[in-house]
Length: 336
Image 1 (cartoon, one colour):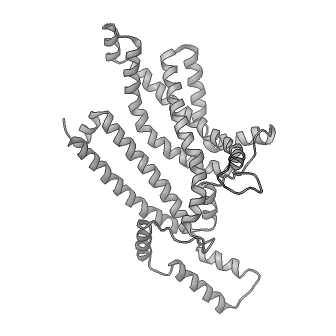
Image 2 (cartoon, one colour):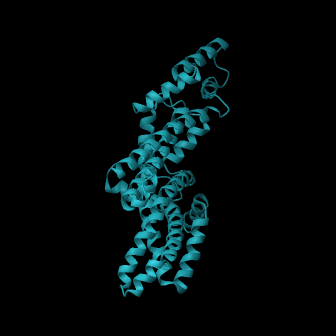
Image 3 (tube, helix red, strand yellow):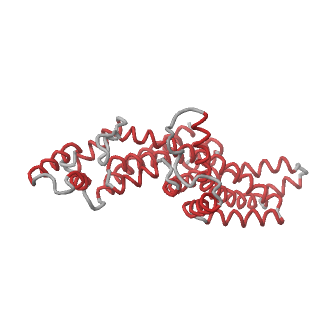
């Protein structure tokens, strides 16, 4: 019953946050100066083609087609209705291409570099931080300084450095793109072998920074736990180091789980810029193109997907923490 109340509270917070995110996404995009229909009409009539009445008719037609002639509150209701049905509309800049299809082409590329980077970065970073805290000495100093340096470098800066050193100077890996010119995405060993060469630079740009942040956090928590009273008491009772280490690792992992969701949000944002640096065909490149042309539906869809991913990550971490630590459930539900 205690966990059910805790889960209900977290679910309600998730829904409230999602509704607030939808409102902000819808309004903030429309505060950007410029009308997307103006850009479309200007491109169509470039060179002075068409009379004033024809241009006006084209403008009015696109305004009706995109629903921009409606009051803002009606546009928001239509937007919410479409989102709940899984329909993000059609692209303004690439009309009549459906936004769902455009995202369906770009999303697998983003997942392909971000998901492995999160898993590998979290596991390796926590192991390095724990080992550094337990061993101490030169290993701890070297691992700590290296981790601090890695986590202090912005994702896009590391991406530019790797691009210049590895791709331009050393010419070991391709400089940009997702696959070689002349190929098309397909589930074959030939395409996979080619695409993996374009995968490594964006992947290392993300995972190195992520490992550094996780290692620093785990090292700090492990050192704190090593000085706790229960560790000294356990050693006084003659309990072996291996068993004490398991207790320390479990307690030190709780803050790391809580921080994981925040780290994922930061890394997703960094990954979008990293994709742009390497011209990787993921959501980052698609988002940049949409922003440059005020493509409202594409921007809304990508930002909402990122928001949903971060909210779900936080929700899952909260649920795992509630299952592991009963103190969290008690604090949330007011039980003592």
